[in-house]
Structure formats: C-alpha cells, structure tokens
Length: 620
Image (cartoon, rainbow, N blue to C red; front, side, top):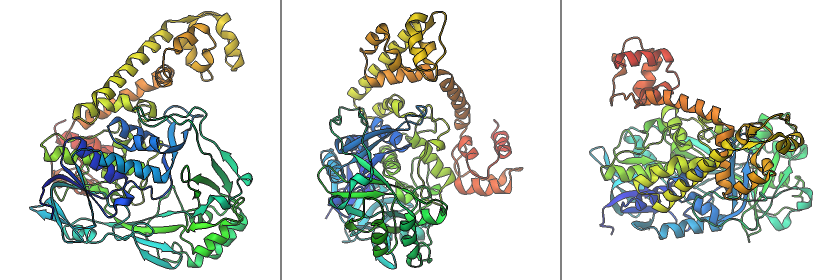
C-alpha cells in the first residue's frame, strides 16, 4: 500500500513525536508520522500547561533550535507566569496555562503545513530489522512502511495498563488502546526494558465549584511568551485557583488504601518522585494536615477543570467522597476519575548521545520510552532524535548539546550516563552551569547552531544578532555613565541601600542587591536610554552586569570540562584490559561505553582515580 521509502519514520504523535517529525521534515527528510489516532496528535495527556521550573528553559531552547513547542504554547496560552522571580535569574522559569483543545489543534495544523511530512493512522506492532539496522515498521494491519531511520516515541502506550482502584484496563490513555509487540521484539533483540508508572487527577465540572472559597491566582500583569518569533502576546488571561486538602479528606482517602493498587501490591513499578499521587503524599507526609491543590481551567470556553495535586488511582467513589470535602468542591461533579498507568520503558543507558540505540543502527528513542516524565523533556528529546535521524541518513555529522550549552544537553547526558529507575524530571539543580543556561538567553546560545544546520531561518538569526548588539550598546552605556550622589542617593535610601558620597558608574550601582534598572529609571538620563530598548534587551544587559563575576567563573569551569570532553574514548573500548581500574568502574564503563572522558567521569561508581588511570592509559 505504501511503496515510498521514507528517510525518517516517527512512531507516535505525542510531544516527542511531533517535534521529531517536524525537525526531520523541516531539514529536508521525507518523513512519515505514524500515530494510533490522528485526532490526538499533540495531546496534553495530563496537565494543560507548558513550562515551569527548568521546563520553561527547555521550551525556550526548543524554540531557539527551530522546534514548534514554544509557538504552539503561545498560540494556545490562557495564562502566563514567570516563576521564581524572587530568586536569581538562573532560576526564573516561564510557564503557560493552555487551552488543551486549542494546543492539540495548533500542533496538528502546524504539522499539516510542514513540507515533506506524511501521516498514517495505525498502530506499529513491530520493526523491520536487517543486518542489525532498522529499515522500516509493520503496522497492525500488516502494512510495511520502509524507511532509512525510525524514531520511537511511544509515550505510555507500550503495554499500557490503567488502574482505578481494583479495576484494570489495557490502554495508553483513558479510552485509548495500548500498543503491543514492540517491547517483546526489542527484548528478543537484546534490549533491556522495565516498567514505570505515572498518574493523572480527576477532571471536574467548573460550574459545580465555589471559587469564593479558594485563593485566586491571576497571571502576570505584563505577560511574556515562550517563542522568539512573532507569536501573539496575551491581552486577556484566565485565573487559576488554590485550595487545600484537610484531615477529613485524608481520612477518607486512607479508608480506601486497602483497595489502592499502589498499596496492595497491584502496582509494583516506580512512579514519579516529584509528582506523587495524593494517596502517596498523605502516606509519606503523614505529619502534614493539608496539601495544596491547583484548580486549573482546561481552556477559554470549556467548563472542564484539572485538579492539579490530586492525582489518584483510588476507587472512583473514594476519590469523589474525598474531593467533596475540599473547600470549594462541596458540590463537585466529576467528568472522569483520576487513574494510574503502568507502561514499558527502556533504560536510556542503551542509547548514544544522539539518542540512537547502541544495538540497532538508525533506531532512535525519545520521550517516555526513555524513562522521562513531562511534555517538555519529551519534546526536547524528540527534537534531538529527529535532527540526528535526518543527519544520519544524509551522511551529516551528529548533532549533540553539551551540559554547558542547554538543559536539553543536561537531560540527555543524565539519561545516557546515569540512567533512571524512576520517571526523570528536569530541575534547575540538575544543571551545574545554570547561570549560563538561563531562559532569557536560549536564543543567544542556540539559534546560530540551528541556523547553520538549516532549521532556524535568516530572520531568526538576524533578530538574535540585533538583540546582542543592542544589549552590548546598553551595557556599554551603563558602564560609561557616571551618576552623582545627589541624583541617586534618594533611590538608594528608598531601597535600604547605602548612600554614596562620590560619583559612581551606573553599572557599579546596579550590582547592589536591592537595585535594578527599573528603580534607576527614575533618573531621567537612564529613563531616556532605556526607552530605546525592548524588555528582553534590558533584561539581558542587566543580568550581564549584575552577575558578570559569577558568569566568568562558570565559563572557566566550562573550559575545564571541555578539555575532558575533547578526549574521546575509542568505540567498544575494552576496559578489562586497563590495569588499576576499580572493578565497579570496569563493570559500569564496559556496560555504558561512554564516548568521552568527561562522560565517563559522570557515571555513578567511576571515581576521579579511575579517570586518572584512563587519562594515563590514553596517553593524556
């Protein structure tokens, strides 16, 4: 039926699959996206939001690299917030609340308008392997689709099993069938697989809630956006709300523990540590008498509400009874109960840095199949897998990002060197160079790389160059302009900062903790200069001045890292031949086969002494 041979076949239409297909197609590969349901492309399976702590940085990075997630998020946003503004700029993280239906619609429309991209609706049940190389897929209808590279982005669908109390349903999402066949085939080929668990909360009818008993959470007064392109800025926003559980809620939930698949042994797989179910929270934190719930609208026009923080797999009647004891939920009507889902994943230490598998050539994994959780983590992997699948079949160099270049680089490096035994979620604390990897400079860090490979267009590159030039101009102005005591002392005094008794450069004043450019704009000369620039340019210049010493220190540390990254380890290196390596190091290194000395040093169980032995052995 399908006689064409594709350059890249992408299996799965979730966040990872969408980005992989878009990247490969936009780079010029003839691409096929195979999905079980054309109506759920780009579906937000869990919360209707993008970004958040560290995740917002990933969305900005995807956008800078020419991906679609930031654009889709902006077009479907109903609220924007910059999180962690009370902390330093390395911690600032953008987040949008999104219209769930509009988000999926925008994804599908963008993909349909992408040249070189075809679609087919069916389940892929197996791969076609020849000479340890993947050459296509076979669907449940028995249709063979041939391709030079395959990207698997199966999400939670591989042998997915849904739990609600003592009830079990096969499925990858509520109401959607599971995928089968691929895990069994990959296991036969020598891959290791495991099981993970995630969950989702009840969805309720917003018309049945009493918002007067909750705390309103409006969006930012001056909302920004994710994409560096000309996506629309929000002119109106929908509020979220906060409410809390209580001891009565907890007692009702505990009454159902004997029927909870989490506690009666039905579920044995590992769930996300940083997004626990409500029953897990009240069990692990028994000393707390309440837990926070975020009441999130699902869109502009729908009445459906997402109860963030109440993820559960308890029997539906227990969920309903407990939920109605939450302030504001006394008369709540539930559209559907929460549920847990178990699914197959493949430990990501079986992958190269390009996300190509070590066992089968031209086969790539991205998203939850690698043990990650979150739309943003999945999308970032999908983008890298799609780029590398294209590059491999066209004989181009692999594209990778290091830990100092992007959160996406940290994510992939963590996965392939350390693996994960629980759903992996990105945090700012995972990035040792987070001051370099801020949300405000993702375009500066990554657009040139994207432009050179052909994803980012010339207009994007020009915008980055203009931003850099304007930021440099403003920074120079602030470093050269002197400010007199009588001009600035009233501002310093008002902000509990020591007064000055002689003229200082504005940049010197700006390094004080309680002082920023917005406060200094009370000085007419500074205000006039700031009016020439956008908020993004002003923010860039201010951060460069305030944190110059810290940024330079991080760059020195990066230079040390790069010296080790440049020392390559030969493919299939036999560590058993190296004397003086610890037995644990030999075991870990032999299994994981790191590509560089720096990567070897990040493997758990490999000590600095082991690295020194390797350096000597390699003549370095």
